[in-house]
Length: 97
Ligand SMILES: [Zn+2]
Image (cartoon, rainbow, N blue to C red; front, side, top):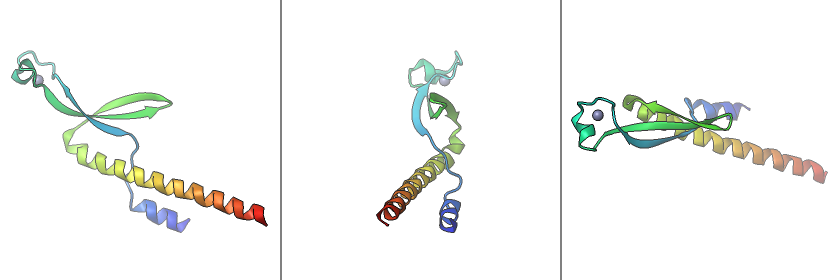
């Protein structure tokens, strides 16, 4: 238990979901970038809530922090898989007795 808490402590904040790059118009009719078809680079965070896919715009200054949090989330998922394996192995050991 202590080991688990210590490992998770170093992985905060943790997030789950995915980030992808998107190009889109800004909505201003006078924007030269949009008129040229170049549009604006943005980042979209997509995630699942109650089985439904949702997405949120990611401010550029928050992008790096979010990516780090997602990496932490993946590491925690790995730790949880290890927890599951440890549980199964313990059960197996008990049955043998
Ligand atoms: Zn624009």
